[in-house]
Length: 288
Image (cartoon, rainbow, N blue to C red; front, side, top):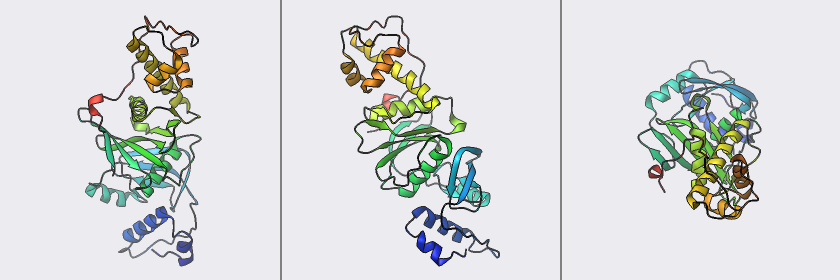
């Protein structure tokens, strides 16, 4: 692969470009005819991804170091390639997986969640952000990921989604959440939301997507109902419900309203109220 020295000097501090360069040089090392590529920035709009065995169309514009509008991604380790042959060769040998710390493992259902520090796995977490930007409206592409933790959802060892959170935020316990299209409508979003509250109290960053807000409303309703039932009809303030449930004050009020309860009351009648079916974390599957 013939890269112009001036271009590589301009991009020398970008780890994504350097990884792209190494991949291209490796893939074309023994090729007689090597295609010429000229670029100095992310100037190719990628509109699709071959993600494992699935072809996924992007909802939003994403620019990558590439000369094609399709990127090929391993659904086990998130390593990306620029042609199907390279991805196929990698998948036959891929045993790397996602690096990080397991925080949730459900062996019965083949579900696990791995925590990744953006400061330790810079390129991988930037790639996760790019995937998020491809599918989430109003999602800002974070290139500086050092201040974030990422939680990657694996189903049968294959990436199905993720959520992220700021390390130092005292207000927000979730920054971004995505379930990939092939895995939606199976409760994985609510499972990750539940895990975000187990990891720490707070509220998600706003604005929420239409789909995300719908899941959160059901979750807030259930958490407030569970808290009130636990207290057995005792008089409680909104602050005490918030502290017990881990929800913010505003989300606690919203949960009460969703239950049809006046937030200004101090004795809350939940007789006849039933929780909405949601997938939650199994406590015996948490790893801390």
